[in-house]
Length: 316
Image (spheres, rainbow, N blue to C red):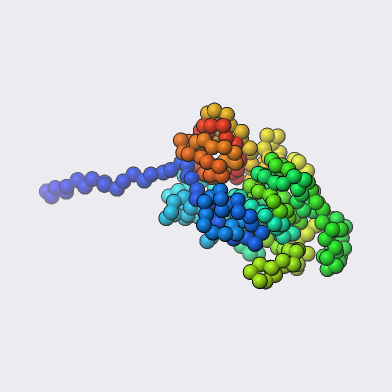
């Protein structure tokens, strides 16, 4: 009889994190101020957007210096984190901090059906106004009754007659559905939650130069997408739950104003995204400073300590 020695399994038990703190991806923008540079202690100039929760290819946030959120999401060993969500699908959400020192272009984003031809999700988004100057506005919608009238007003540069403006102030919330003409105006700092898409079609960019050249306009796409007359969603279409800023088939968003220490759980979430928008404290014993962002695994309790305000987003 041959005796086979017992070989011990020396493979280490895989660590399965339940919360991840993210390192943002940063984007140059011609209209940017210097708030993001200051907030995130950057050397680069003209950084207009911090993509604080992103898993887009080549524009992903990081969970460490050596691993992106996209890589973590695509690793099948991490399926536990995302519950029953189909990881063959694109990571569904993108969160940014946007610092507009000058006006953004007047633009429109595609819906899911239109974006599918580009192998992308559509781009419905929403804004929480973190800071803005007194008596500021955004562009939100248009006044054309027909597509022919819209095209004529664009061709004749009748922007004051075409564009609708909406007053904004700090702590306002605006839901911007796909196919809605819009523009962030100067001197505005915004938290933006959106579908994970990087498709923007410009209709007007003030004839300004970016590094010596005018930026491209995308009028054919704009004309294909814009609703004439303009449409507005009902409150129920934006949120079917009273305490949520958004609760619909695309995503959910809720504002949490925490005092002292509390535990939160979102049973309907596949996983949870969290960004601190006021003060500092801890999230599940991790330090949480202003604009820090985290993702938290499915069904994991979220323990928030400190007098801080968070925006929490997720898909069902």
